[in-house]
Length: 326
Image: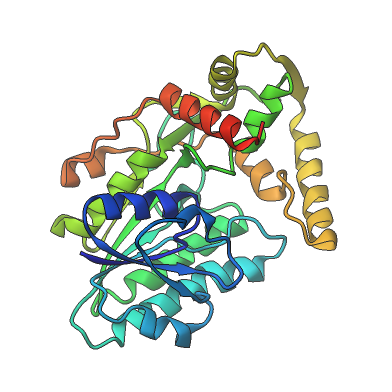
């Protein structure tokens, strides 16, 4: 396989790139100008420095490529326009570059998110044929990216992954919980426990590879999640166990969390720094549930996530310690 990975220096992208190389594939990696290439250091990849918002720069980048793994995107920003410019328009630019390459039908593996589907109910996990119901800008932009990608189905082989919350070495999104627990605090949000789906990064990579290889994946979207369901409280308990600490519980009423998330977005916009807490994270934490069914991936692809949550947490904790993040 000749693969092109956008966002290759990110958390999921760097894991995917390493797995592709381990399997003997050629890998070309897109990194945003000024982006940190350290996660790809020492790897036998071809680097392209360009931005997905620059359609002209993408056309030569997809030349000679069979499969494009489109992972580049933005997860935190204080403006809706930025989410859509990067996540939605960026996807259109990738699709257009692939469709006009004139080298036969290429396959696009788009990494979307459970956020595109929106939160679930505590009693029923989301299924792929449920209508989109995102509740924040990031999810809206990912839903639009999926619509754009599938609009090219006559010219591209399109397959979409919708991962739940991804955990593993290199993850920055969940690092805030590890740091908080390591400092002796366990967060409990008002309103009761809320079911949560997660996925280990190695299992998320395996699904992406199946989407690149399986003919059954074309034209389809698939959730990616562990067969285990957890909650924020149980997740923090697993973190505490991995770190060997006994945190005290801090109760946070839901209205206060909403206010803190909104204030953090204002501070991020003024300072230009992306703070760990934001409106997006607050809304995610306050949703009644974030769960999804794995029946479709099991039935059509034979996909079976193999990593227990406790192992994901342990591997993450070890990595954070080694990197000095805790």
